[in-house]
Length: 391
Image (tube, rainbow, N blue to C red; front, side):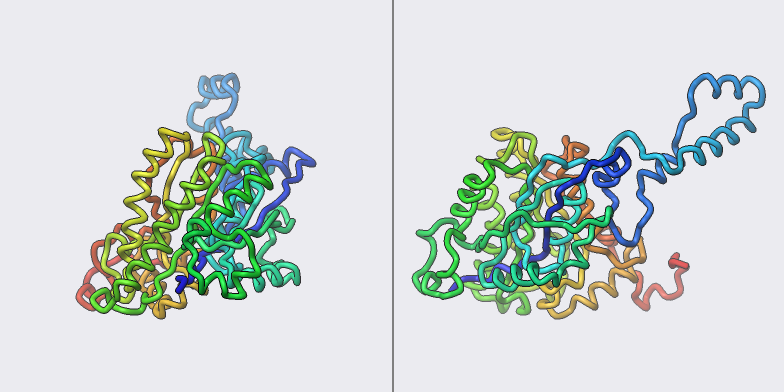
């Protein structure tokens, strides 16, 4: 029986328009969260601008302190509406394949959207049983609101491929799965076949994103998890990344990047996150290190994983206690705010960009700092301590 590979995110692509220098800058900016409408680069430009050398020295000679302050304020105001010339996340001309997008309510979609906003072309791999619903929802405009990019255009997906990353090639597919009408109606959906199809259609890719995770017995404690359930979680959630990289790396351009998604349960106890899923995430992080070495040495491909905090995605709701995890994070994380999918997507865009050209083999935490905590400060034990709270 095939394990259901549940997508943990969703995606789409944008065809960048370069009608003016300002539009070009905005389309390659890394700040896409709807919570932060003002680009971080604009803030950087206004706070760190250094005035030309001659006026600075002249002012320093006459009134050092006052003139420095005046010049800083004046230059900040003068450049407030001008784009910063350096360090944009620019992925124009790059092509990304995101495995594990089946709706607009998860990290996969958010990553696709951030990559698209930075100028990348988006290809998507969707779990076969969810393919028809996903494609029809796109056609009917169900996702249009969540496809809106910072410049007002809609993220577009160049092509959607059927994909079940549990199977490497046609020989691995059991007879009952082949006979399943949901699968028999879709051709070339194993990892090997999808990689070959992408090569035939587009020649190469630059970015590979693994947004897949599934544990059929995730609601069971580890002590009650069956061997089949445990191995299914490992297969769908961690080995699938090895398989994807194995089959896609031959068509990835040198200097490309691969990114997966992990969770703090890989290294800390998260009661309720069972069925072998914590083991699968630990394996995924360990594999990230080895794959970074092998893919880096042989193909100049960087391999990183993002340890994301809790999100109210459809996949996460299957665990059954996602709301409690979000509440716990709000109470105990250094940053007392709810994590957004866009924040994970923006991190992925950075890791896929030339700005992260020396980063590989890393676990990047995007969880409001919850990973740094050793205890839960919301416990009654700490009620008499003067613990800082967000005002």
